[in-house]
Length: 122
Image 1 (cartoon, helix red, strand yellow):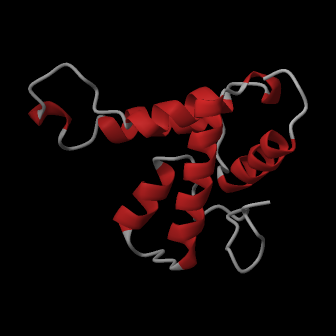
Image 2 (cartoon, one colour):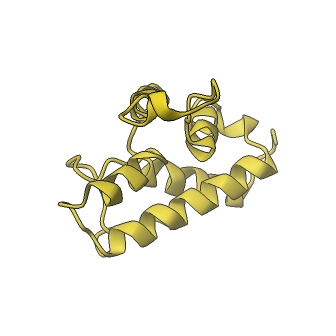
C-alpha cells in the first residue's frame, strides 16, 4: 500500500489515538499477563499471549505505507473496541482495564481519550 490513501490516513490516526502504548510496552504487558497466575496450569507450551494483541504489536511496528488491508481491518476493529469500552469507564474493574491493555490502550494513562473528549474515528 505505497500509495497515499485517505482511508489509510484516517485509520492510522484513529488507531494511534486509540492505542496509547508503544509496541514494546504492549509486547511486555502481553508476556507479563500471559505468565500470570494461570500460566503453569496450561498443558501446552503456548504462552497464552492474546493473538489480537500480537497483531496490534505487529501493526505498531509498521510504517504507514506498509500496512495491508488486513492491518486496516484490525486497526478499525481495535479503534472501535477501545471507543466502545471507554464509553462506559469502569476504572476500578481490573478485567475492564486488562481488556483494554490487551489491545494497547491503558485507560489509566493521562493521555487516555474518552469518546466525549475526542472522536477516535477520525
